[in-house]
Length: 393
Image 1 (cartoon, rainbow, N blue to C red):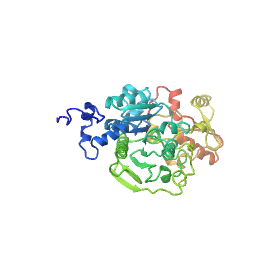
Image 2 (image 1 turned 180 degrees about the vertical axis):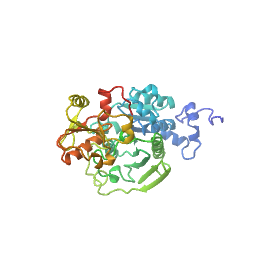
Image 3 (image 1 turned 180 degrees about the horizontal axis):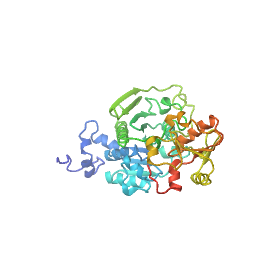
Image 4 (image 1 turned 120 degrees about the vertical axis):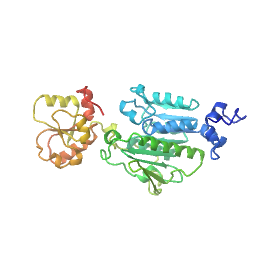
């Protein structure tokens, strides 16, 4: 083991001797040195979300010596998080993520100052939260918040270090920088609700957010130091099944209403997508579809009346567990899977969380089914409220 290169802190360096020892491998890098490490110590980075992407990003930003980390999250640790969210451990299940994240980050580097925001990011608070930070690292998992992060980044002039994950593939870039495009230049509109499943619906390889979140931390550090070539105007595509990394050039759109024409001057909410629920429309379904909660479905089944219950999940989900008497009609096999169903019989559909089945129910209503319902909250709600002994996934 080599000894630390500093016997004591140089006068006026702004660092204690333990800090210089901690950051010694940075200090010997010509691109960092004492001046660069001082920039990191003086920097303020806002991290939206301390889940899959936020975990590695927070750990490495803290270890690198970023002086202040702002953490925005209002969720609690769930057992299903632990496959990928390495900020949290088994003992943290049920705790607020901000609490377990705080403990872990302080253990990694007690010199980092943490500012906690135990709240969802909204149009009402985003400006106030982000105002005093140098850049934003987007660790969100849904489109509405992702568009909001992009908006506040552009309107406040804060670079947006973007990352996203799905199954075995990830993306990373730097948006909202004066030299490049914003997220809305690349994706002017979010996909229709239910088209892109969330990680809870579609799954994600546990190590993938580690890769993407570490890339985000790297890009943030490069921006703070002013070194290298950040992913400004470049979208990095990661395919872990083939272990391929590709880069695509992304140009700024002069007609973008946010960073181009500047028509958007205030934060605006973007509708629900990617398996999320827009609070303004919770409980509603498209077309002639009604929402049915788990207890109502239990009553319908208990009356013995004719009812069709359809499970639209994938085969592996069906094999984990299903509602007794349901018919397996995976979406990937439609319309063949629903052939022979009686359009006049009341039909209730469900999936894991209620998003896929809501869209499938609307499709049935469009095909002439007269009484169609969607199980609110999906089979997770059924297991929670009705069948407490069933497995979870």
